[in-house]
Image 1 (cartoon, rainbow, N blue to C red):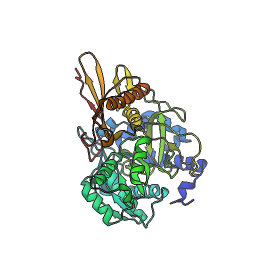
Image 2 (image 1 turned 135 degrees about the vertical axis):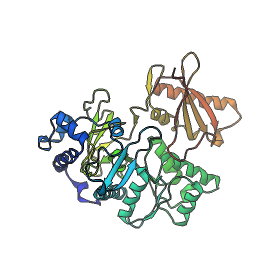
Image 3 (image 1 turned 30 degrees about the vertical axis):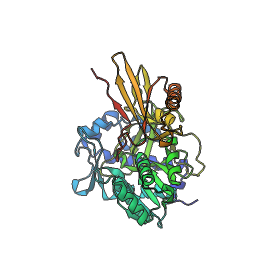
Image 4 (image 1 turned 90 degrees about the vertical axis):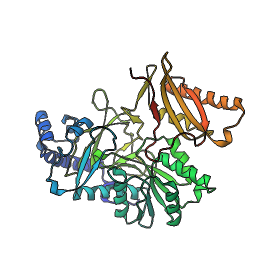
Length: 432
């Protein structure tokens, strides 16, 4: 097996030894800002008090509100002259979250991203097309630097402009792409409209992330383009992409534990949950100088996958994100996550590429409406066939989420398309 660097082959004892050493250094660095010095003093935490990885549970959580309260540079632990880049979270309202990076932070991040890409087979000979947004969003530059670190010819295409994306991929024989899962289907549909088979593109690998998606959705992309699709996980607060990545086994994302300490806790109690049980992911950075973050509550819901990966790497694996603690909605007293709905509807061969979940109130109570695009060959004038599709989808969803939804079938390519992150849920209920 080929490794990008030696850390991929470390055993559990060595991983934990490095984590303890780096956690002590991170605590010492974090104490250079008033926010963490006060927090750590109140909890009685010093670098010397850390004896094992489990001692991290004594450190208070950091929340998104904490980061907003310290905006713009309250968490900085180095002089501003040592900062070479700043990224912001993608929120559109209110105070953003700003993360500042030193030159060493950027170099370490690029190495982690290169490690991820090398793990799934990306090599110097590949042509890499980055179809992700640049600017303050971390996804673009984070993966860009990783691709250049590997030595790939890198095309910074940016987000959107589908016809240009297709032309670049064809003209430069793009073999690897970074793309949102929802946008991958948009590109495929546009190729079909142009009378071209998406499988004729030279693409062999796609790196996808930034929005939750199911196994069924991944299969659709892989079949559409005849390529392998690898799930990526990252968040601005922990640099961005490169935190966790699937290997070629496609059975969970390896979290690079030489750079992060991951925990999964009960969202209500904050206590650790057993391996295999879904909870909230909590992350601590171990290699960041400019703005280290301790025990950050991501609000992302996932689980640690028990056992050892067949690829041989012993860095812990987390499952794909099943949703966010704040994405959950309640209909008729039932907790529902959007991913539960996608998982069901994407198994139907009649269903097209897009869907929309609409929450309404009819005056008597909540109504869950799911608008589903139907492929052209199945959108026929025979109402009996359409009603049969409706009822089958409704029954399967009822079995999964315990609420009977209203299913609305619409023609292919009629629901709004977003070239950024897909909007899957609209809550039209009157909050009053």
